[in-house]
Length: 139
Image (tube, rainbow, N blue to C red):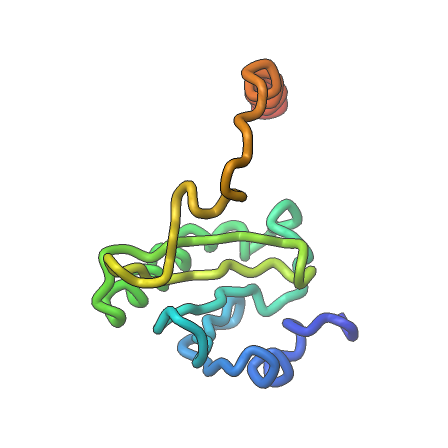
C-alpha cells in the first residue's frame, strides 16, 4: 500500500531507527536501536494487513509458530525472563506486534501499568455483556 509506512521497510527502519533481525517470505522482525528496552522489536507481515482482525491466509496459519520463535529468540538474546507481546493497532495501520524483552528492574511496567493510573473498574455488567457477546460470536 503506497501510503503505509510498514509497507516500505527501508522507510520504517529509518523512521524507527531499527535493523532487520530476521525475515521470510511472509514475516519480518526488526529491532529498534533506541529507547530504554534493548531488544524491543516489531514483528510485521510483509503483505499489507491493516489490523489483527484482518489477519488471514498463510500469515494467519503461521502467526503462532512465528511469534513463539521470535519471542523466544529475543528473550534468550536479551537474557530476559520473558518477552512481552503488545498489539496496538491505531498508530500505524499495518498489523504489527511490539515485542519487549523484560528483565526485573527494567523500564517496563507491564500488567496494571498498561492502564491509566486510577482508572475505575468497568461495571460487572459491561464485563459480562462483552464476555457473552464474544462467546456467542465464537459459538
